[in-house]
Length: 196
Image 1 (cartoon, rainbow, N blue to C red):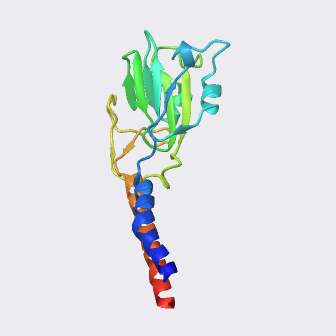
Image 2: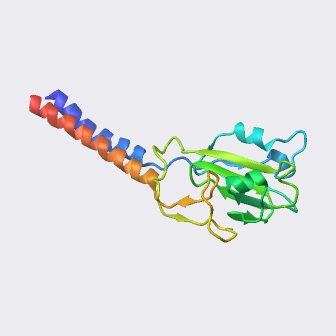
Image 3: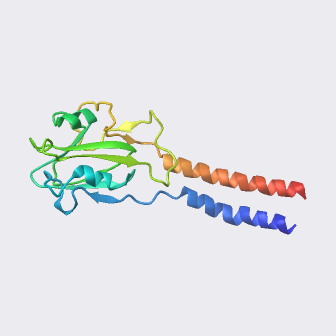
C-alpha cells in the first residue's frame, strides 16, 4: 500500500513538473558579432572569417550581428558564394548594423556587396545546428517564407539557402515528451495496483 502511495504521489506531483520542464522553450539565442570588434570588413592579416566561423558553434535561434560602414551584407546560395556573385542575393542588407537570425539548421552563406570585397576574403559560411533543447529539425517540405530584405526572385536550392520553417517543432516535441512521460507514469501506477 505504501508503494502505491509513492507512485500516486509521483504521478500527481512529479509528472506535471517534468512535463512542464519538457515543454519549456529552448534558451534564448546568442548573438555573435561577425569579425569581432573590427566588424564586417575586408579582412587583414589578423582577420579570418573561416577561422572565426570554425571556432564558434551556431544554433537555431542565434543571431549574427554585422557592424559595417560603406558596405553591405548579402545572403547568397553556395554557387554565388563560391563565385563571389552579388547579382542575385537571397537577401540584402545595407543598414550598417544588421542583425540576422539563424532560423533553421544547415549552412548560411554571406558575402559583401561591395565590388571586390568578396574576392579579398569578405565572405562567411556558418553551419547552424539544431539547439540541444530541440530533438529534431523542421520536417522536409514544411512551409517557408522569404526573409525580410529579400532581393526578389525565387531562391535557388542549395546548401546555403535562406528559409524560415514556420512549424513550431520544439513545442510539438516538448508536448509529446510531456504526454509520453505522463502516460509512462500512469502505466507504472496501474501495473503496481494490479500486482497488489
